Length: 193
Image 1: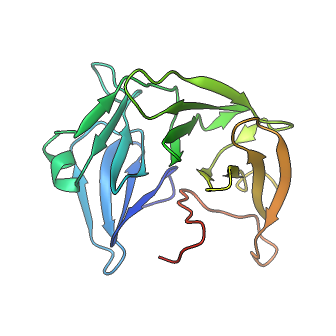
Image 2: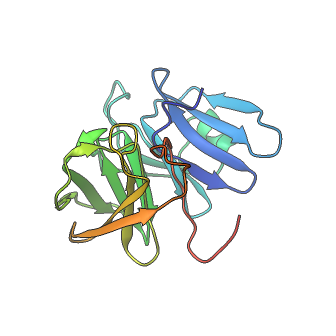
């Protein structure tokens, strides 16, 4: 069941996600739909530099942060390639341009930090927004896309400037008149998967 997947990463022929309430990392084949799990505390996951970035701040009993795995097998073994002491209070995560963007499920702001040792979190208030974040991603041009369609009547993504939080309107999506019921999002600018 992917209805509770809030963040999504895509590397090669696999999608990666954390699922609630299990809080485990899942790998889903986009070819045949097969699913594998890693017994790893996981609140949110996305792709980063050809690997998997896992946020485990809320579900890790010893405290967490961002962990970067170069492969799913490394995640299954609990051996991150790199760890970052960046722990946003969040269950959604996206990356772009060497930065992490994170959000709680219902929030008027996002947190962001450079994905590097010693990276410090900063908060970006979203202009005119105080709703649910069902899915989010940041595009190469600096636009932050948010879907809050489960509870709003928006047929598309709310668009914000990822650095300033300034509202940039709505990116319409054809949904047949129904709210966009999408959880998890991983966008690619200028390329096809």
